[in-house]
Amino acid sequence: MTLIIIYGILIIGLVVSFLKSKEKTKKAFKIAKKAFMKTAPSLLAVLGIVGLTLGILSPETISRLIGADAGIMGTIIASLIGAVTLIPSLIAFPLAGSLLRAGASVMTISVFITTLVMVGIVTMPMEIKILGKKFTLLRNGLGFIAAIVIATIMGAIL
Amino acid sequence: MIKKIKKFKLPVLILFIYGILGIGAPEIAYKSFDISLSYLGEMIYIIPPVFILMGLMEVWIPKNKVETLLGKESGIKGILISFVLGTLPTGPLYVAFPMTASLLKKGASISNMIVFLGSWATLKVPQLLVEAEFLGVPFMILRFVLTFIMLVLMGLFMQFTLKLSPDKDFLESSNEEL
Image 1 (cartoon, each protein chain N blue to C red):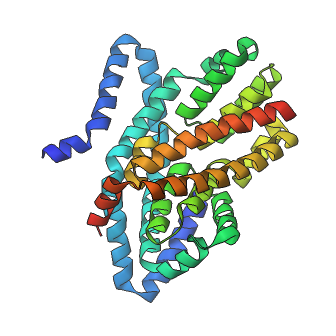
Image 2: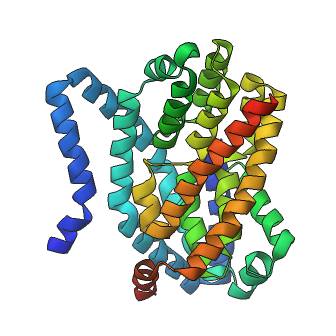
Image 3: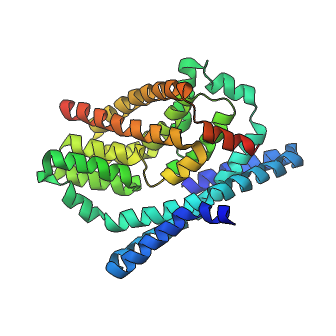
């Protein structure tokens, strides 16, 4: 689905661009190549780290760590696991749902979901390369704090 | 040459960790490798078009337009545009990094880009549907509203901080290439 959308936009963009100016289209490819070469090493690193974190922290391991009787420690661990890992939402939400039904607190689940999607420690090498160190550290750091605030409010309301 | 090796320092370090894991816990190493491969399978199709799109954006999107729509003076309209752009169903967050860099260079404000990245990561339409199904509608709506508020606050805070102390090294290195 994602692929169809991205390639659809790309094809339309390329056709329009090519009709308007060959020169500019060439330049666009040049920019793309340069940016890609610059990012390639960090992309490789991200791939490796994703494999390592998910290989070590399998869904079963995560369930055990942040399950029902884990309490406040469970919430802390959930925020850390969420911050480090990069799990596709199609796997993450069913996992979070089953943990919630198994008795994990709303706070734990919301901190897990929010850090999971907002804070990406494994993709940091790439983000630093593209957007700079300060931007990346601030965005992820503040995202982590925001996730805790969001989870605390959600735990109090729901 | 040394510069080239330095560039690949992190991948080499990770390969090294894989090596150690392969000796100590071969099953985990095998599983990790498998996961890396499956992510490679995903990225290999997504990354090239994303970078080409970024190139096209760089040549075609006029600077003054980005500045008026997403710049420092764009106000609430800028926040809403960034939010809508972010929620469109368009793939994982690392796809958004090159786009963000491109928009920043063209004059988009940092606070708007934080809202853009944040909505891209956490408030996507297809993702929200899955969330509602597994965690319930009240959970989804409450998280949506709170996240949006936090993103706007985060953006304003970061804009302020990076204005006080800009990332000089990074700005210099990205200017060099132009």
